[in-house]
Image (cartoon, rainbow, N blue to C red; front, side, top):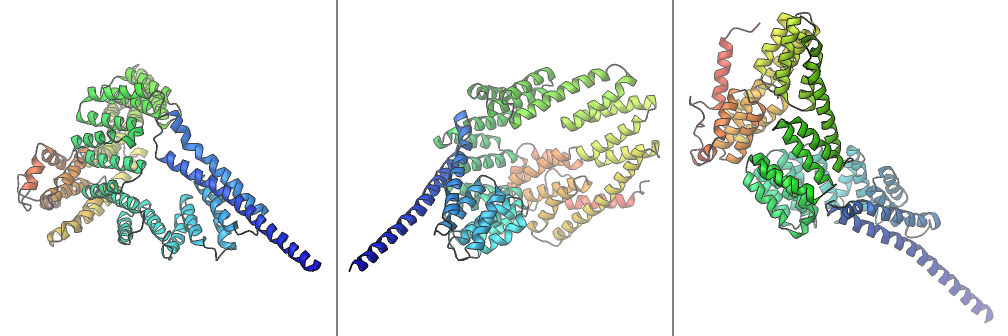
Amino acid sequence: MKSIGKILLLCIVLLAGTLVSGCVYYNTFYNARKQFQEAERKREEAENVAATSQKNRQRVFRYRDFYWRAIRKASIVLDRHPDSDWVDDSLLLIGKAFYWLRSYRDALLKFQELQDNFPQSLLLTEALYWKGLTLWASGRAEEARPVLANVGESADPQFNGKARLALAELEAEAGDHAAAINAYQKLLEARPKGLATRIWLGIGDARFHLERYEDALLAYRRVLKSKPKNKINFETRLRIGSILERQGKLDEVLGTYNRILKIKSLRSYEPEVHLKRANVYHLMGKQEIADEIYNEVIEDNPKTEFSSEAYYRLAMVAQTTQRDMEKAKELFASARKERPGSDVGKAARDREKDLVKLERFQKAAAKGKKKGLKALFNVAEMYLFNFSEPDSALATYRRAYAIADSLDTELAPKALYAIGLIYADSLKNQEAAEKTFRRLIGTYPVNPYAVSARERLAQALEEDARAEARFREAESLMADGVSPTGYLDILRQLPLEFPNSPVAARALYTVAWTLANRLENPDSARVYYQKLVDGYPLTEFAELASKSLEGDFLQAIAQSDPDAEPAARTDGASPADRGNEERRRDDESPPKN
């Protein structure tokens, strides 16, 4: 009997030890999971609050400490209890924590360890999903695709939809927006739980990139109806404002931003919204109101990125509109001092330095023809490359050429070549560019710049031929009675592929004319007319587009016969007919030497 009692006692002790040991394993993992959950909560909280104060800026990185604590506690399970039931849970938790800490190499090691050592784990699908995200985040998108596709085809309802969403987002990141829309819409048909906001946001963004603005607005409004979190709510409303701005509906843009200010949950974003409002007033030509808003932002948000940006925008107005360089330097200095380490602060510092340098070159250029010639070239280069002012650069290069030509220096062909490049690449005036390059070749035939000019002419001729072929392809589809959607994509893409071709302006005009007259979409037509005016201001098509943008002309078109020709035309020919006429004239004229 005593022996039986001892055996029973031993069994009880062993069982109790096992239970205690199991509790230790679980308690250790439980504490790790608790730290991870707190990290997740703080991260999501940080993502949904604008960094408008020191407290909020600190919050952005505070969650990182909790991820590290979770990693340390979960690592105890791996080190001290390698045979426990919580090893695969710990590996997954550590991998996810490393992912959010952007330690992608360490994260991949943990996901792979779980995959290799626990092939039957119930957590394997989730681990593969996070492995795919980590590969993508670490710049290995092609490796991520098959991993995510595998999860997307799984029977796991929690992660197959998320994996398919990630694949759609991969398509969008790769620039294939049509494929992305298709993937989003197929996923939408499956009605995955909790993903509607991101799906509609992805559809909206893809349509935006394809310049299908009205369709994008519909998608963004579906995002807002899905009751998104604050950050997505705010960013979606900004996207809506951006589209309306592109469509020239500035009053509606203001209405969009003013509505944001009335939403209590978005109050932390107020400074950014006010900056957006000020920019709209600037576009309206109401600079006094814009200046007032900028100064209010500066006063209400000292030493922040917002006050820095407000100073920066005031400085840009002083430089580009008012041409007051001293005032601009002072304002750029203020922008730099407000937030030196921010992107805006760094940009302000660079602008401030450039203005000082420009002033020095301008003083040197004023000293005399020969001594100031090199400085004049420096001035022109700064206007072109530092300040993106091609008109000012062109005028300066012309002055430089006149001086260099009178002095018979080697700088004369350099100035001519620069003038040709500005006409070709910045002002999109191929006729003036070709004339300048031919003048360079005729005057300085053996100069290295003349050699480059010959290469540019040959390249332009080749690209012109390819662009012309693409336009004729679209024309053939138009002549065959194909739906406009069948040829508009060709015409939209043409200026992107051949921006320096004379056909690019004609393509944009045809797109705008078709949208206004065939598809009765004056808002989208206005966008393309404006693109034409902005991108090719010196072409005859830009003149026609300017007339179309005046008054209520587009509205009148939308209300008229969709097969009628544009009112801006006086010869009764469609854009395609105009192109045929131009080609006939070119064929009848003698070839240029």
